[in-house]
Image (cartoon, rainbow, N blue to C red; front, top):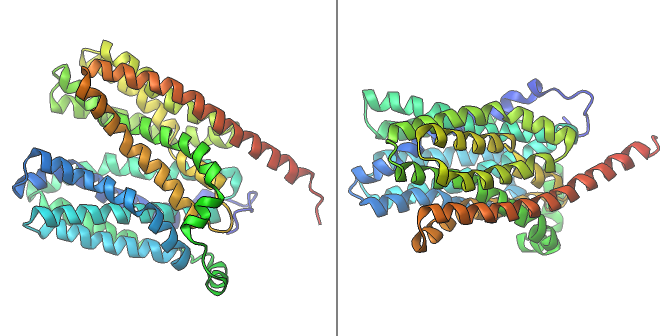
Length: 410
């Protein structure tokens, strides 16, 4: 299907091949994440080492961004998705069977690499099969598949642990990854002619693509860093504050579950808004909701008030499902697209990694309440920057649409 066939496009025609692999894979990852630290502890790791092993997932994603883009440019999205699925299954199998903390860390690192390869390949495939008029909704659904995994995966994992042990969750992850790879094998292999031509003329090096688009990556890319950073804060700052005011782990989990439901409910409206009203109308609330929530958090001293703050964050985050991938698809060049998407993914990963590090750095020298206020003020400033650059994207898209309409038909 051509990305230009807007009149004939229907999401149900691409649902299985476009979203099936992502949903299945996300369920496995969603089940694995809550018990990863516990698996490390069972193998003898202390608390700090267990935390470092959990962080290996983000490290793998960060390290794999640029190489993944280069690899996809050479082998195509379908082969990349299949390979990522099968390799991730091997990583999950190692995590389930190993008795070594070091081997578990290596497995988690490899899983992070596979997840980044998977995400970039999915994004490239969606650019090809979805018309630009429906792009944000398509990317919102794609972002929403991870949220589905976070909701469903832990429930299945908890049931497995009840009848077996923690290792069974990693076996679930391995089976999910294999199924995702097999589902990816049913999708069309697009872009073969382009890859054949590139093999003859030579693939564009990643650093050449980055150099050609360095201004875009430094401006709109920095806005993506801010988006990633603000969205990642909910996973670090909120649990710390909940613990600070004395909430139990079970109460905190319930608050996060409720927030996840809000998140999932708003992903379609957010995609529709981006397609019909522009990218800025969603991008700014994502950052602004987190900034305001951080400023309000020191006032939240009960489960109810913390839940209300978390609901505010979830509303912004849900509306922004797929915003980073949408902006990347809007900006990606025709030549060197996969390499560019790898660099774009790196911007998002820097933000995702930088958010928790920022909280840690401020909390080292100041009380947690001060860290909340400092992050909130930075978020307010960041919302202005994000609004400016996403507004430029909207104006460029509007000008392109006008030019398309005024272009004489042949």
